Length: 195
Image (tube, rainbow, N blue to C red; front, side, top):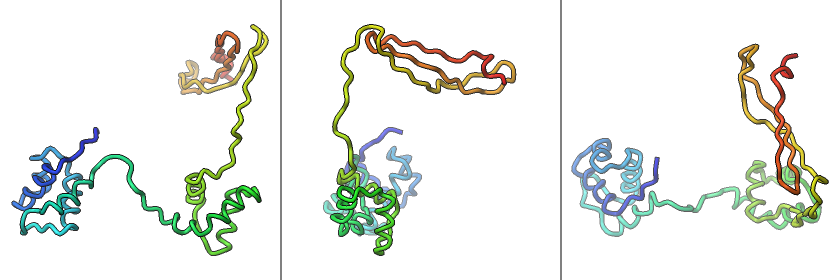
């Protein structure tokens, strides 16, 4: 489903219909919004102090409701960030100086009463760009025609085995000549499947 930004006029119309006694389903049908969107705005409106039997929402209340469905990056609440932040220098030291694996760092933190999941620790480290990476790329020099070829096996997909009727995985050998970039693909024959 495509994303549709809801305008302040639409939000005011949702609240106006709600205050007139319309159901969420009726409001959704009348405004062209989904019921989930209507439900989200009505819940936010009630938290902002808008009552069903009260006056129309003020400009301040509409300003609070406007960003409820706004697209784009949102600030995500990460409780482990606050838990790991005091250990940041120690984690960096374990990674860069002691060269410990993240699983060992997780164990050391647990011994110090800081229990976090592996994925939370990994996200904490990735956000700070602390993982060791080799910044150098080794490039091959130009080679004369026919001297170097790259070769690899890969899965191409599935095909029906005519003998058994079963679906079989098709593997292939691919060879690429580095000078001309000419490719050669060799899938196995049907006979090589039967054993």
